[in-house]
Image (cartoon, rainbow, N blue to C red; front, side, top):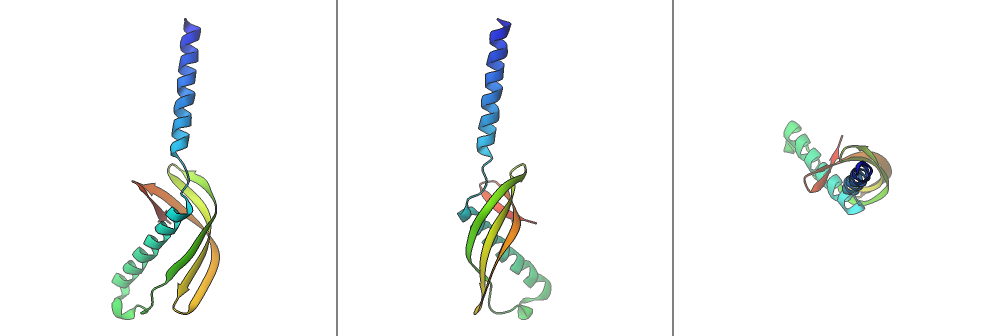
Length: 113
């Protein structure tokens, strides 16, 4: 009887750990792009509050493309992702790679420092 109970508890623990692992999926490319766009908007708004709208450049940077190169779990509900970014600012276009942290907050991913 004790052997059956131990086996049952072991199976339950294994199933629970698999279920929790399945909930911890890294963000997909579309979620990363949305998080970076929100971060760019929020950073620009914060800078505008600091220096005033008259000191801001008239053209806003635009995230044209984001490609996910890979993500690794960094902490609970947090991933460090390598991404390739293409950002335009007026006529200028810049591309490069970055290592960024993303955290699941509620139902959405947020780019964090």
